[in-house]
Length: 287
Image (cartoon, rainbow, N blue to C red; front, side, top):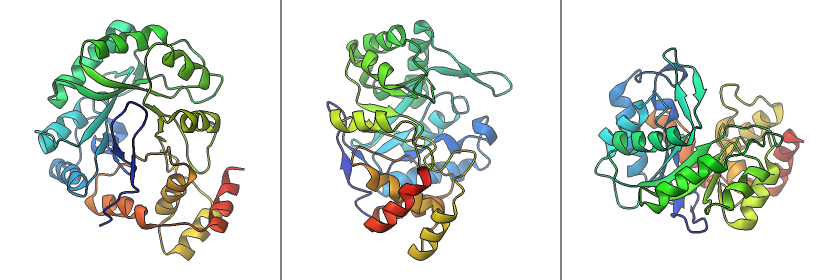
């Protein structure tokens, strides 16, 4: 098992995180709704991640809802001192499992309290405001919602603030209210629409955490990716993750899985170094 997990990243004013972390979304049931298929396996994969040295777990109380947070609490509480749990607010789930944006400042605060209760914490390490925009044209104002989180930060209920699914304009808007330590946007080898946001995060020492690093529910399909993986003796997923690690020192990964074997494959990416010519070949996928 790799010991360095891609090294660490310490964003401005933020916690030190292993660059390869763990995303808990897949621990819930189908479509991230309801209980896991195998409860004991879900607990085991969380414990295995922390045992391997992962210090960065990504979650949200709307996964399940509450399912992943309750699993994290069951598996890992009391939490190791260096473990940092990053959560999100900004959505709810309907009775049929639909994703419902919920960005009223009062409910944003209520969601923070939900996360505190279900994780069994007095203070949340990092809370990302999920705006869920996927394009640079998605510039809905977020001042009221982010100010609500900043108020809870001032009260000592949150240590650090972040954003999810935002544009450059929204990032700047949030930074006018409080420091931003992480941005979690859609980004992968095939979809780089948020390249400018990544570049800004690099300039300002903000951790950039790609969601759907493997393409999400529509996995990346590319002959070039397959060819590189075959030559490297690795899986397509491992190569796609390795490319992200090498793409920028500001990137931290949160690949998710409900399997310990698959977790070990993801963590092994720390030892997969892609030569410059291979990186150039993969760069062309998103060209």
